[in-house]
Image (cartoon, rainbow over the protein chains, first blue to last red):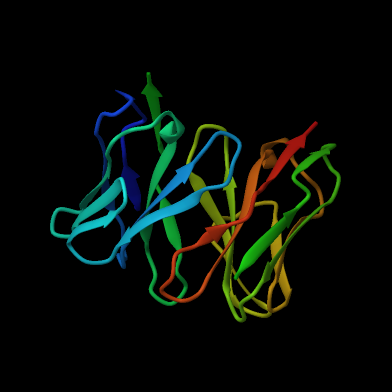
Length: 111
Length: 111
């Protein structure tokens, strides 16, 4: 089967750093994406890793280790507006771009 | 720039009624198009994807169908809705090797 595992909930305080892990088991792998979704809203793209290593975009970074089937999203200098659900998603096909999503991690940022 | 439109935003339908949700993309040509369903508090489940006009692939057996009558138009349909069809339906588009971008979604309630 195909599965992605990520923690269901994470809580942190404003200004802190939080890491959301994702492990995956899929029949095809072309990259790992991260999406943010606020309550009632649509998912918005955060980052994508096709190769091993760290990708940095402002306060957010994403890491991938293909040999370990593992990645994480790192959020620094947390702000209240970062409270949302975060989904990892495996790109399972090169030509169709199909994504397989994890169940999401709800991040609650406290003052 | 590219934009994606989904409508309606909210829909309440009785069991057994038909359904038609529409998604259109502007500012790009020959995009890959996707329909997802999201249950409350859960991840996104890919329902259908399309790599071109008239080309539809179904990911899960269900009560729904999809069509792509024009390059940038993707329609999700049902002849008779079931209670289990309730959920948040999201359309997404992507160019090859680029991230998927989501519409604002349709929240469907079946009574």
